[in-house]
Image (cartoon, rainbow over all chains, first blue to last red; front, side, top):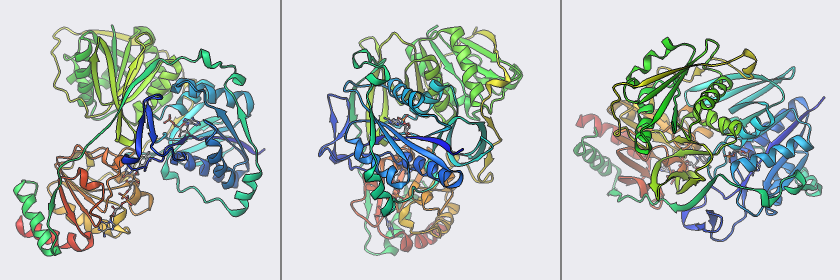
Length: 264
Length: 323
Ligand SMILES: Cc1cc2nc3c(=O)[nH]c(=O)nc-3n(C[C@H](O)[C@H](O)[C@H](O)COP(=O)(O)OP(=O)(O)OC[C@H]3O[C@@H](n4cnc5c(N)ncnc54)[C@H](O)[C@@H]3O)c2cc1C
Ligand SMILES: Nc1ncnc2c1ncn2[C@@H]1O[C@H](COP(=O)(O)O)[C@@H](O)[C@H]1O
């Protein structure tokens, strides 16, 4: 029996966008790019796609990608399909601002109502708000086990054996399927789509699901917290430059400076 | 009882991190409790420093509590919350509590604010400020004031100056109800990456290398420099770790370690906000970079435009002769 694997991916602003190209959207109380550049897939989520494809190559699996986002997100769902995922589902994001609880609810409902699954993969965190919250909410909503910060996975007789990459070292964790794991960049670089992959991805349909279809009316959505403002952090310091006519001189000047500051 | 502080009793720094949370609680409302969970009360003796600095203490135990198990942590804290009905639940953010807080928020169906770095009281209501987008911006968030709320506190952001003595603290004991089946995931012991290394968080000087090193060899030279500095060690950017030049446990930044040494060398590092979130609290940042427009020069105290490969060997000699 091939595994049924689901990967949750989020589309967001490229976290490497220079600050001068960013602006604050006062309506949604979030960050936007000034030129409304296309969104990209969260980096850790591509690591999660790679993890799913690793399992597919090794054990055989059907890989379904799910994203809650706007219509713009459709384009970026093509990439995981081109990498080798089988299907993609886009849940249309409501127009009203939604919080993590609602996001997780919409994702959980889609998963439990529409797809049989053995394993759910998520990124360790979304690099916009760095919450690391949605995956845990999904796991709790579905009442399945979860393992975070995973850099290696194996499956043995429907047991999942994961290695977690923690700040102080590595830790093994085991659980029965079904389960959810969050993948960290230590898992390894996501593969590049092949030409054949790109062509077949273009032929694949992206299934769309609305919140109403999941039994959630937009007018019923409430949030328990509210963002009241966003500010850019300006951290510019006055950097004192050491003249670098030649390296010998610069190294000497730096040494003296550090000595004067009592740092060496 | 309005505020409940949930303590990560396995954190070797729990005494000092909890002081921070207590300092925050003292500012908001001086009727708060701290909750310590463990197998038995005896295993909490390392936390005696907390004895008389909070008004109420809760000790929740069960011999089945294996503190490796996140499932049991979540269940235990959930029981403590249900027994005490707090309005605000505070935890100091670390890898363990970031997961526990999210799972508690889901189970209790309440909101969560992660990594708050500042808390203000404006118009009688609490405003939580937290970094977003890797630290280039901050969001100010308020809750509806009705639902209980979980807040994780960024380590080191609050200090612990606001501590009061409570000579007669109350202690409440809770017997946790745990069953072995609750442990869905079995965790093995952590295998430390390199136990002999000086912990970065305790180093006085850190020499950090990035993609500009061009390969793993650069770290040998950086180690030589670190060895002649006061209590020095090396660190790395994510780009250098992802390239496989050095182990990920050396990574400094948003998804790595947070450090605050006296002296921080950023060598061949561009200064991305996600890297800087891990080192801005350093006392003096020295940047060496070939690109005069690199962002790192906006955040460094001392800058040197140049090639590390040429400068560092001479710098090592100069520092040796000065010492
Ligand atoms: C959610 C998220 C979390 C992240 N977490 C972290 C984190 O924890 N830590 C982290 O570091 N990054 C993190 N990043 C990545 C971060 O955004 C940057 O990509 C990364 O820090 C870049 O590393 P770097 O500065 O070494 O490389 P680059 O940005 O490539 O910079 C290399 C620099 O070296 C200079 N250089 C080149 N040759 C020389 C030479 N011979 N001498 C001197 N200088 C030279 C170049 O001018 C350049 O400025 C994260 C990203 C995301 C999205
Ligand atoms: N809108 C979304 N659609 C699909 N998956 C999401 C969405 N938001 C978050 N996730 C998943 O949850 C992970 C952590 O996100 P966060 O909790 O927002 O930091 C991401 O890496 C994704 O795998």
